[in-house]
Length: 335
Image 1 (cartoon, rainbow, N blue to C red):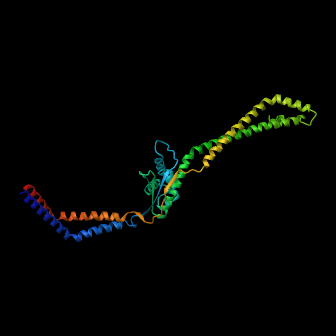
Image 2: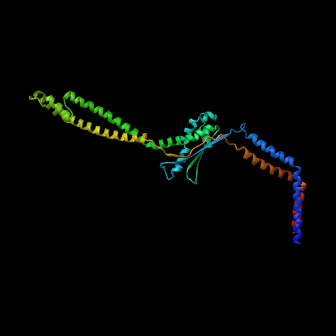
Image 3: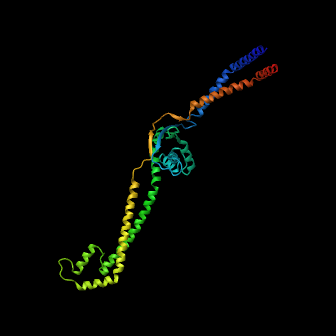
């Protein structure tokens, strides 16, 4: 009996499938028209009349000798720099985003959103390299930005790396200026001591000048007693002060020499060539637009409209639906 019932069930379902086919076959031109219309509408509304096409160029690179500022990896640190305000400003200003995309000069939020939609930074989890996909309305500019991206990024990292050295150089420069002013002032005092009191710096050259002044240098047999007496009085009166000023002068000269050595070392760091980015895959020029994807979208909409049309025409046939439900109930009662 179960075999007979199963055969009846199969017959009922075969009859229903036949009804389905007949209903759909009668509406075949309607279904074809709906699918065709949906595809044409997709193609029309995704055309350049409504959506500006975009082109893509990609570049891949590794970070090189980047010291992360926190517990993050160097790769993660570089990816954050790719999305930094400095990088946004570098790209958008150099490639005139405001002018080419008709953005108001004070709309920085729109500019940042455009950068994020045009520049996609992602991590290749298998190899660990960074991939940057650049989109633009001009394929040539998309390629140029991708080519230029690691250069601009490297400059930003260099500035971040050299910022402490720049601050140190500014501080040393100011310190040198202070020492120079102090030395200039002390030199004027020492010159005054020499002019007013005939006191010479205590150096080998100063000793020879003093000998010549007193007439006691080699080749001279007489001593200028008046000069000696005057010099003795000057030394007794101003000598200690002149000596202290002289020692201060020598100390300042030594300090300035140390500062100059430090300045030179920092300056070498600042002018040093640095590279923090190693490119592994160069970008290439691609004249084929990647957005919007009209064919794929049209296929999806055509597929959906096809099934939507089928469902619509089946359920508009109320008699068919009622008979189908009656058949299901009858089968359940027989069970």
